[in-house]
Amino acid sequence: MQKDYPRPQLCRENWTNLNGKWCFLFDDGDRGEKEGWYERGLSDYREIIVPFSYETEASGIGETGLHPVVWYQRDVEWQPSGKRTLLHFESVDYEARVWINGRWVGSHTGGYARFSLDITNYLTPGKNSITVRAQDSDSCVQPRGKQRWKGENFGCWYVQTTGIWKTVWMEEVEEHYIREIKLTPDVDRAATAFCLMLNQKPAQPLLLTSRILYQGKCVSEQQIRVETQFVAFEQSVCNGEEPWQVEYWSPEHPALYQVEFTLAGHGQQDRVESYFGMRKISIEEGKVLLNNRPFYQRLILDQGYWKESGLTPPSEEALKKDIDLILEAGYNGLRKHEKIEDERFLYWCDVKGLVVWCEMPSQYTFHYEAMETYANQWMEIVRQNYNHPSIITWTAFNESWGIERIYTDRTQQQFTEGIYHLTKAFDAMRPVIVNDGWEHTVSDILTLHDYEEDGEAFRKRYQDKQAIVENLIPFNKDRYAVAKGFAYRGQPILLSEYGGIAFSTKEGWGYGRQVESREAFLKRFEEIARVIKETPYFTGFCYTQVTDVQQEVNGLYTMERESKVDIDEIRRINLL
Image 1: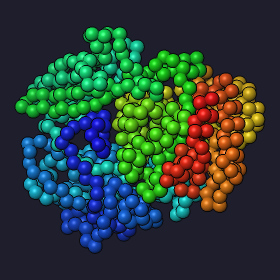
Image 2: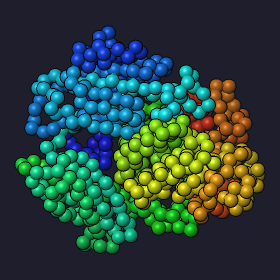
Image 3: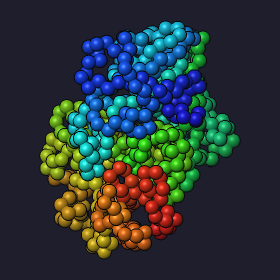
Image 4: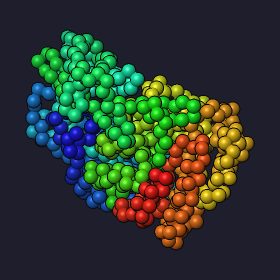
């Protein structure tokens, strides 16, 4: 992958990074559209460093109060080349409206998914202005994850993120180009299914060439005549010289196949690069299997915050460092909590061999508008992140957030069932978790959250599996594993939140009593870890968490990524 390339699953050479200095204005009176700021420009503006939100120090502003409407503007140079020009926004929170040279181009709603606009017909030779109006709110209808909806931080909710917070970039494409790729590995048949979407139906047939390579050596190649906008085909990953040799992706061996697609015809040629991993996730007899073998998941909760840049990673190197810190501590995966991470993070998880649970940022109210909003944005996220082999689980809901009455409310139950089946219709290969940690409806894995700090109390609570899964006893004070009207059906059981140990401080909080020393930290950590591993029906765990996040100071590392305990000891305990 090219350095800093924002979309590693669909790479082209001709692209321009638009991060950096932009003109910026707060619009607290919401006057900008009425006064035509998109035409006349932003007056009395200040500078902001994109892609950092104005709430962060890295943006150059660092104002944490809520400003619901903000404006961005910058100039770009453009010369006609006979190609089309696309403008990409990796994420804008929450509603974005875009103008080029004062002309309306398009909009997007949703703070966690990318969107793209074809701006070719709006550009003129020379200097061109890009104007963006972003509108956010404190509404609990919109999926907001860990972003607060009150004036101050509280509980486990932190400073909001407004406007552009991931990379903005442009690229040149042909008149007919590959818009989207869906890659589905079939481990049992040693093949991969490809589904390609073009930007439009070709007026005349085109020729698609697909080449699969491993470590630079061609494995297979085929050509397909293209006459429609959608192209679906299957291709073997077996080398004719060594037909038995298939490289499977796993944390121990994160093998990646490269694939090159060339779409030719009408005097043009669109060439893109992508990659995939040959891996299979399945469930049998209460176990999660990776490539048909039992896979015990040693996960850690990762919220993806940085001290000076909030939700936005300060650099690609910072993303790689976080992955390395997790691997060094003896974990083989992470649960990306209430955030859709920069896609370069997923790329490096693919490369380094770290499995990921992809989780939808929660909304916190329930009615018909919230349901529609959630469904649309969730499927946009699933679709955009589908190809990453590191993602092995979709987590659709967390701890009844936004579905507070799911234990008994049939409407909320049906909503979660609908999201489950919608996700499975698009992705039949990955497990889907519904209501991670608390009362499950239909779910491929049964997950439990429990921050009990005493090892023996923990052991006693979970010694009777049937009492837990049949709702005979609550597993976490007053929580039950299964919603009323549903039953446990032999799913794998995983403890997907525990720990959260914090050192003694008046400046933040952790779960349970704070500890006074590293020795006390490791003693509690090891006692609980041993009980979890000695509980025979647990198929994995997820410790809270990688780093401190603002007022939540229960990380193994500080927000500056400095270790608070002996990480070698954490690794030893995790690998017991």
